[in-house]
Image (cartoon, rainbow, N blue to C red; front, side, top):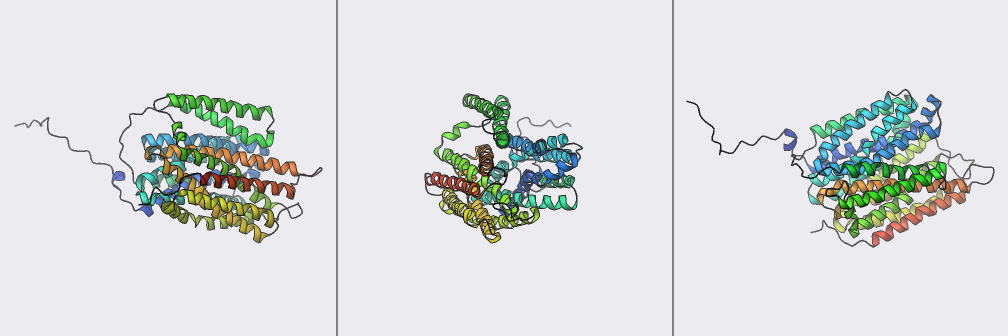
Length: 482
């Protein structure tokens, strides 16, 4: 006799895939996210060491090969905001898999490239890696208990800085002992490794679906708008701030950005919730991010290798080789990274406001050391180490402040927008710094003077003071304290 199934009986639940049933310790999850974030930092910094070699191999020039940096920067900025939002909507793990696979392809395109154009194209594809940090921060908040989140975010954010310093040194070694192709091959291999970690080691959240629609118009408008602004800023040191190309790009980008904001305020499911900026804590944190990026972050990254590697016959300079200068910067960065857990614990106990103030005050010391100790290796090592410790507090406090202020569902989106602001600020700072140094050169010489160096230190000082001032305007206390 045939048995007819009872139509009222509940269907057996479909067993979830293994990735949804993984139980991982907090330390394991943080380690995985750090290892994944390293590829973003590596791909951001690695090409700087290869630029002189690529110029020589292809008989090109710095302006053309420099697009290998610019293309990555432009795509990374747009990707950070857009992919951060998509991760919040559809699952950060899923978007991270797509990004890592795309970054692998981009690395292979550059590695196999037989022209500067191909290398630049590959670097543009690699630029999607700019979204990795916001997604990793969102995953930390999603998978960890509340008390573990601030330390995790501090370590993940700090690893980006330490890995950036390490990548410049490692890339230099590979170029010296192999070829520039090798840095892209290593990047492809590591991106594949990170992809496997996400697929087979990281716990995943089951898909819950979403009723939200992708804001295609907002996405399409945002990418070229932010690209135009960043390109104008990035090229201002070459073209000049008064050049029609610079002004045209920045003004066009700002107009497009204004129209984008109007659209985002009207659409039901925006690609970026600009209303978050009406939150006082978010607004102050974004302003502090901009101040720190223009001053300490942007100018600090530019001036340190210049002082270390400039010849001793110049008005200032220690005459170090790129490898030795990279090693000194790496040691300082690793010392700074050791302080990132302390920044996270400070956030947990008294709030990220305190960590940002500590970092800002340490950057004031950095500016003073740059003025007083730029002529000695010991003094510069003290400056580099102090700057790294300052970064361990300030750089990691900023995303923690955003996490404290926004809902869980907006974590990657908000930290992605913060990444865009930081990227733009660093570009502005670098451009201002190089302009000030070039203007300080005496007639008949291209070497910047000590007066120019002191002026740059003054900008670092001012950025640090403004950052501390904005931090003091934030409300005291920790959202993690019981």
